[in-house]
Amino acid sequence: MKKYISVILSALILALNIPFCAGAYSARSMILMEKSTGTVLVDIDCDKTLPMASTTKIMTALVTLENADLDANVVIPAKAAGIEGSSMYLIAGETLSVRDLLYGLMLTSGNDAATALAIHVGKSEEQFVAMMNDKARALGLENTNFKNPSGLPDDEHHTT
Picture 1 (cartoon, rainbow, N blue to C red):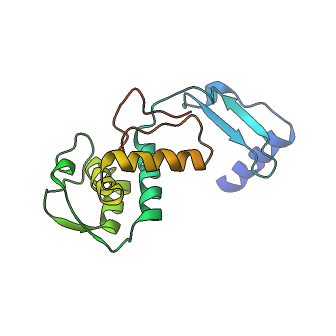
Picture 2: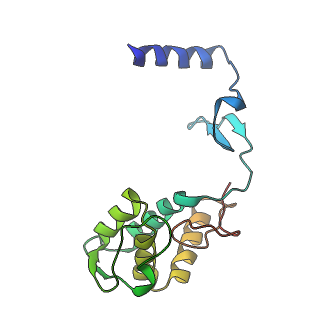
């Protein structure tokens, strides 16, 4: 029943062209577009530059999926063990598959998994970040800049 009420209310809002209210959202910025026409329905500071934190991990996963064999084994480098923030508690020298590291990246938001994958796929964290930025440009994300594969704070790590 709740589902039907929600659908009816949504249809009424769109049909009556009731404007969306900025105070109704907790996001500091957002844009809502109709897919087939590209019509902007809601724009709340959509060009505001903001840190992207764990959203970074989506790009890390995408670049990894496009450039690595899921069944490949990764020996965890010392640089990936003990990374600050969320972690899957990797131990330097242990071996995990790319697939398992992706699960740790996305399910536990593992910063250590992000670093291990970056080094495995890009041969260095810096080269992997360059791959992330190249992918962002290819997707048209002109106001996005990555400085690391995990989303840890950096003044130059941002998106709109």
